[in-house]
Image (cartoon, rainbow, N blue to C red; front, side, top):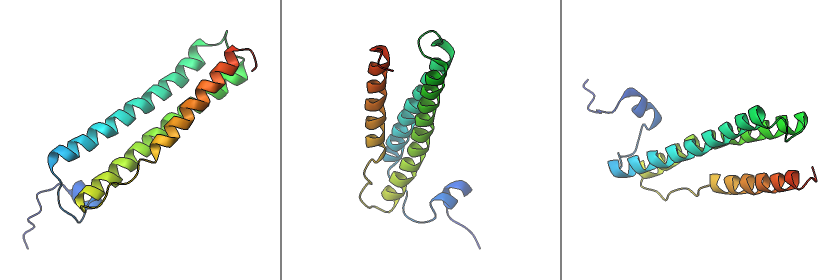
Length: 126
């Protein structure tokens, strides 16, 4: 029996049903995913930089905590980006409403907490 689906095996496995969306929308979804990955890499790089270059600014415990928190935020963002890409791609294939961006409140909260923590550290409170 001939199979007329020209998609790759991975594409058929990830999205077994639904119609292929307009390639422009798929590429826009991919660009958004890559932007979130870039943001995640910035957080991970920030964590590495804090550990590598702030030995005279922070105590060892605070430095390790900041590094771990920044890298964990990067991991959460990267995971959230993949999850969001999949949800949007699936919604487009099924012609349903796009899901709400749950990752944005996480980034906003993490950024606000991080900025507040840095203010406290540089003010000498921590």
